[in-house]
Amino acid sequence: MPCIRTCRPCVRPIISCASRRPSFLVHSAAPSILPFFMPPVLVAILSGLVAAYALLAGAAALGFLAARRGSPPSAPAEWPSVTIVPVRDEDAGRLRDTVQSCAYPTDRIAVARPDGPVPGDVTLTLPAAADAPPTWPQSMVRQSRADAPVVMGPTLVEHDDLFLPRLEALQHLGRLTLLGGAAHLGLPLGPGTANRALDAKSRPPGSTSPEASVPPAPLAPATAAFNPEPEAAVTRPPADSFVDLLRNQAEWFRQAIRAPSRFVQAQAVGLWLVHAALLACCAVALALPAWRQPTLLALLGKMGADVVLTLPAASHFGQRQLLRSTVATVLMLVLSIPLAGGWALVAPSRGRHAGRNAHNETRAS
Image 1 (cartoon, helix red, strand yellow):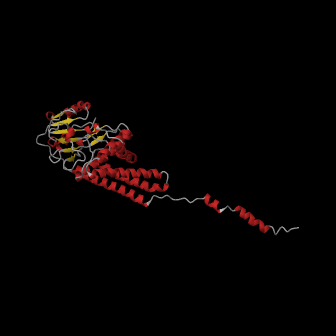
Image 2 (cartoon, rainbow, N blue to C red):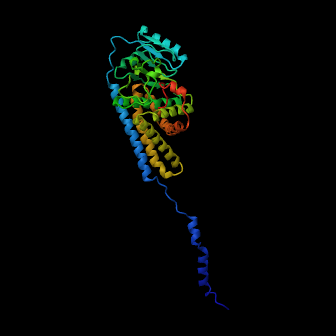
Image 3 (tube, helix red, strand yellow):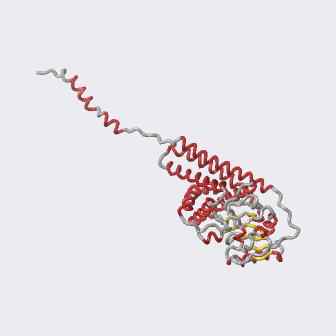
């Protein structure tokens, strides 16, 4: 009869061998997971773009603060003759009512047709469907001088505490700070505002329309000035929809890219790059958690720069309540600016209508 003890040592190796899985099964069941961290090169590029944007915002804010602290010019001994040129015929009647109640001498101011002759020493233009305060003509005419035949005034966006109009209004305040700061620092001005005062002496010979009086963008510092007075601010309605806002932003990019000034072109390209980089990083961060922290830090830096950019104009024009929408505005710009830049490259321009109203405001900020 065989001994059972002799078989027990042989059973244990068999059981232990059966319980082991092959090495190829172990490696296939637990693959190595890569961290997918944001490459240091991308971190450096993103940080550089946000830092450059913050420096531009800080310089514009300082220039705007210095411009608004300046003393306004004194009133002329004799007020020149002024002609207000509306963008649309339907605005003429409302502007005539405004002229009757304004502080300017009524015998020295008149309203002309958009496509008719423009008499007078100074031509005033404003955006379509915009409302002007009674102090607007005097404030704009006071800023006119011989070395600056074109004076740009501030334009505010009506929002009625609605979501999308609030975002557009806050974005436009940043444009006003950038415009006023660039004018004070002596930099070329890109596509600006339709709230303008045009000196008749600067018109080309034989020109009768206000379009011929407006120099092409960008306006050189020697030919343009900015009027930061709240008395010169006009209000215009917001864009009807998000698509209209994108269309206006695309038109702004199109005009800025076609400008002869390298500074204006670099400003538009840099604005598009910083928002496109943030949008791409946000999209990748949705799939890769390791990208979320640097992307969030970049967004916070961008928000801080936007607060610096919009705060001077918001405080100066009594619009500080719009700063509560800073987070939503930054997120909207991260989406809309890259789309508007692409739209400006692939979509045709507004054609003859845009050329005819080249002095009008492109509502992109």
